[in-house]
Image 1: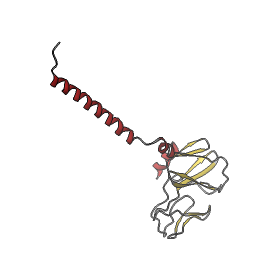
Image 2 (image 1 turned 30 degrees about the vertical axis):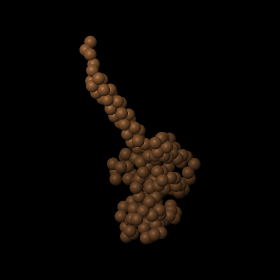
Image 3 (image 1 turned 45 degrees about the vertical axis):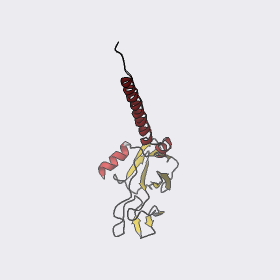
Image 4 (image 1 turned 135 degrees about the vertical axis):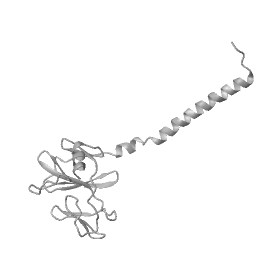
Length: 167
């Protein structure tokens, strides 16, 4: 066995401590980059729509944004770009934030749609902007997934993907 002098021992000890410190630093950096569990769970909102009646409006919060859910009345038509079916009902959803200046439009009725009180922007009940009013585009459609009569916002399901292909 070769003899280790003092300088070689100190060099190996320093290299070992530096390697352990670098490894600990990388682990700490990785932990700071991972989102907190509370943030991950806040990214999903689940709503049961089985009790909604035709023409009913409902609003939920998803990631701090208001998201509307409307069960359309029979005979209102089906827009493949914005509507989806659950059992026999036709539903439409959207992020209820005006695409003009970021205000929150008021829902007037299933027939009148949404009115943004700040600058007079109007949207249909499907969330499509009405020509001649300030909003440049329709309400955004949040990612969603259907599981029976439940809608989970934040997850991407096949209905959402089909709607995005149509748009």
